[in-house]
Structures are given as structure tokens and as C-alpha cells.
Amino acid sequence: MGRTKSRTKKMLWRFWGYLVLAAAVYVWLGNDTNIVVALSLSALSLLYMLFAAPMWCMAPNTTNGKPCSNNAHGLLIGCWIRKHKWEKLKMVFRRQRWAELCRRSWSSIGAQAATVGAVGSFASAVAATITLIIKA
Ligand SMILES: [Zn+2]
Image 1 (cartoon, rainbow, N blue to C red):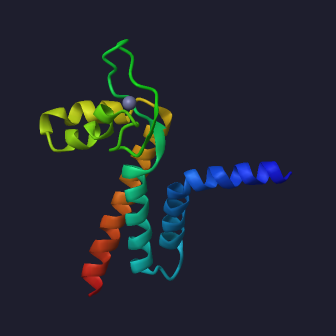
Image 2: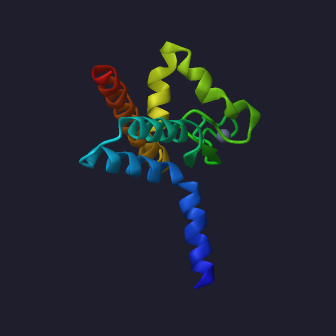
């Protein structure tokens, strides 16, 4: 029993960004939406999707031609291999590589979840910002 509990806790810890996003949705759906809270939660979950969500690295491997299946963190950070680590982040700054970056972000389940999460939290953050500006 205690073992299962600690495993659940560990899993919750790894996926906390998704819980934050769920909390943001909950805040939005509430009757008395606190926009500042919604904005903070969305921004936090967006950061998680970009830099912490667990997924595969998927960098093209020069040795065997298969995409790298090491664990990586977030849509923009690769695995522990130095060459892979900042590769995705660098792609963001080169427009001609965006298509490749998108393809890679869509190539494993963890990354798909994080991409959807990133789009959702980004939309939520933008909506909160606009609401704040209108209300101010
Ligand atoms: Zn890698």
C-alpha cells in the first residue's frame, strides 16, 4: 500500500505541469474567475511543457539512423547527450527548421501531450492577458 502511494506521488511530481493546467481550466470555469491566478497557472504550465514535461528526445541519431529515445525534458530541451540538449531550442531561432521541430514534437506520446498542453496553456495565458488589459 505504502509503495503504491509513493509511486503515485512520484508520478504526480513528474506530471505536475498537467495538474497546474487542469487547475487553470478549473479557475476559468469557476463563477468568479481570478484572472491573475489563471494567468499565473497558465504561464507556469506553459513553462513546464517547454522545459520539464517528460518525453523522448527524438533527435536524429547519426549512429543507427533511429531517433534518440533517451528521456528528455520539455518540448525544447533534449536528453543528456550534449549535442542533443540544446538542439531543439536552437531550432526555435531558425525559421527554416520549424517544420522539423513540429514534426519532432509530434512524434511521441509524451511530446504530443506536452504540445497540446503548451498550446492550451498558451491560449489560456493570452486570454487571461487580454482580459486583464480590457478590465484595467
Ligand atoms: Zn538525445
